[in-house]
Amino acid sequence: MDVPVRSSRPTPGQLALAERLARGDAALGAGIKTLPARLYLDEDRFAQEQERLFGRLPLLLGPSAMLPQPNQAIAHDDYGVPLIVSRDGEGRAHVLANVCRHRGTRLIESGDVVPANRIVCPYHAWAYRSDGALAGVPRAECFPGLEKSDFGLREFAAFESGGLIWFRRSLEGNFVAVEQLVDDMDAFGLAALHLYRRNTHDVAANWKLVIDAFLESYHVARLHAATIGPFFADGITAADTIGLHQRAVVGRADYLANIDRSDWGELRRAVTYTYHLFPNTVVVVSPDYINLLICYPQSAGRTLVEDIMLIPEAPTSADAERHWQKSWDLLDAGTFGGEDFRAAALCHQGLASGLVPEITIGSLEHGIAEFHAKVDAALA
Image (cartoon, one colour):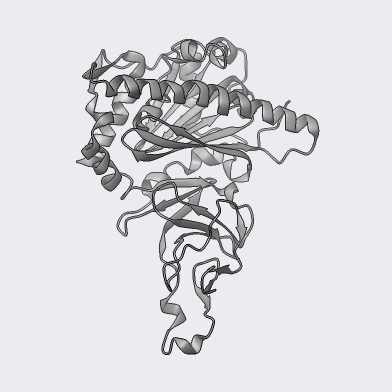
């Protein structure tokens, strides 16, 4: 099914990576490196990551497509904080505490998108607008002197651009690190895409083992031999960084040699771009759709991974639905769930045995070492 690519041109960085891939330049690290197994197992380390990474850095909540219309809201609990992600009447995104200011009641109970002209507490019916402002209090005379303007929902810092919605728990900091990603996400037309499917996998592995799987191409021809492996040249990856984030491209150099690489549509059909958005998100850009994989650490040995698939537009025919369902099944249940996440769980099992004190990283896996160096720096 030939679906038009909505964006018109790649960024200079995206094009430069494709040119390197066309030349057959492999992204090789310098020799062998090792990482101690405790980085994945230690509970104190996990607690530090929660405080200093997930408590301070911008974190992705989901695509703009999760709230396609004004005055909509959805509950979001996966970071361990009860949140409401909302869009006000003017279309601006907000991230609010999903906790009533009266008696602390949870406001939105389900994980489905709901109308948010008024968010009403199920206990005493205090009502809030989609921007979090307190709009109504039943029997207001029972609260003499209460100023509604002082009792809006707690609001977290939020940032929406490039088709993604971010928040930050800490009162200090900024969104400069994620602003650097906007041009690349806009090049894929991410803000205009339709949310086709989402599914959360419960993976018995440390969150960094899940991320590691998307920072190297050494496994692709072997782990993915029955799914996507045949589409890619073994070990040929071009990669670079955008601030804290990693960007890579894989494909087949022989395909690239025979196309007009200045044609963004042709280029996207020939290669797959993968981004690691530091610390916990992976973006996989297939020719006609995009998957977001957001890791939500639950403990040192357990991670929820949400897979979100974005497509150009909602299916309008049975053939279109079959096409997208086939792509969804290939990646969500097959490549990701059946292979990448399973491999992460098997790695965690082996490391937890204590029989391997460290892991070994080869020259095709240097992206893993770079990731862990950035984690170390953030913790320090």
